[in-house]
Image (cartoon, rainbow, N blue to C red; front, side, top):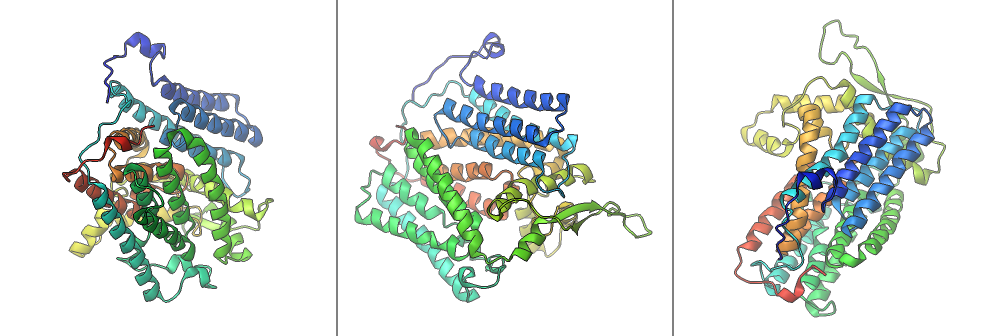
Length: 491
C-alpha cells in the first residue's frame, strides 16, 4: 500500500481544494436546497417533490461517479433517504400529515451528518491510498471452502428443521399472514442468514482464484441457488431483497469497473422480486386497503386522572384510496409510511430513553437471565406503539432510535458515527481482504439502502449477524495462512 504524506492546509480546506471536498460540497448543497425551499415556501407539492427528488438523483450520481463506485454507502443512503423525503412532501395519500418544520430539519441533518462523519474519517486518514493491497494473514483456500460449506449446510439444515417443526411453508399457504408466523426461536435467527451462502461462493471463486466450473466452486454455487428458495418459500420480501443486494454488492467489490452495470441489474431484480413475492402473500384487496388507509388522529384521553397517555395518537380508518395502480401503491407506502410515523415521534415524543432502544437485544438477554423486565424498555415499547401511524405498518425509519434515545443530539452524533464507521469498514475491507469484513460492510450498506424503512441498528437479527461476522472476521485473522497476492480485489 502506497503512502501519501500530503497534508491539508486551511487554505485548501476553505477553497475546497482537496481530495474529499465533494462530500462537504454535497452536504452544503443539501442544506442550501432545503433552506431555499423553506425560504420560498413552496406550497405546490409537485414542485417540492421534484426538487427533492432531483437532489436525490444528483447526490447519488455525483458521489458514485466521484468514487467510481455505484455501491458507495453515501450515495445509496442519500438516494434512499432523500427519495423518501420527497415522497412525503407530495403526500399522495390524503391521510398523510404534512411534515413539521422540526421533522424536516431532523430529516435533512440525517444525511448531512452521515457525510460529515465519513468526511472526518477520510481527512484523518488522508495519507492512505489503496493503489496496492498487501495480503493479510488469513485462512487459505482449503480452509475457507470448508468453513463456507459448513456454514451453508448449517443454514439450510436450520431451514429444513424449522419447516418440519411448523409443518407448512408460507408460499403454499392460503393464510395471508403465514409469513409472519413462520418463526421458530433459535432456528429462524440462522435461517435468515441465507444471504451468507451466495456471498461466500463469490468470495471463494474471486479471492482464492478458483475456477467457477471446478467441483468445489460448483458445489458452493449449487448451494447458493438452493439458498434463494428460502426467502421465496417463506415469502419474505425483505430477505430476498437483502440476499440479492449482498450478492451484487460482493460481485461489485471484485468488479469495481462494472459497479454501474451490476447496480442496474440489481434494481431490475429488485423489481421482479418485490412484485413476485407481493403476489405470493395472498393478501386480499380488503386487507391492503385497511393497511393503506390508516391515519393518525390525536384524541383526548377520557380518563379523569392525568397520565402520560393524554395525547395518545390513535389510528382511525378512513374511506380513502390511492388513485394509483396497485403495483405502485405498495412501494409508495413503504417509502413514505415510516417517515409519517417518525413525524409523529418528533412532534409527540415526551421523553428520551438514553440508549435503551439501541441496546434492545442485550436488554432482552438480561431480562431473560434475571427474569425481570426492564421498566424503561417497557416504556419505550409503549411509546413506540403509541406513535406509529398504523398497526399494519409499524415502521419508523433509520434514525428513530437515535431520536428515541437522545433526541436531535442523538441524530447528529449517531449519524456522524455511522458515517465514520462505514468509511472505516469500506477501507478495511479493501485493504484486509478479510471475507467476513467484506460481508459486514455489505450488511451495513444494505441498511443504508433501506434507511427509510426500519431502524436497522436496533434490529435484533442485524445485531446477531454483526456479532457473528465480527467473531468470524477476528478468528480469520488468527490463522497462519496467507492469501495469494495475485487475487487482490483491487482492479
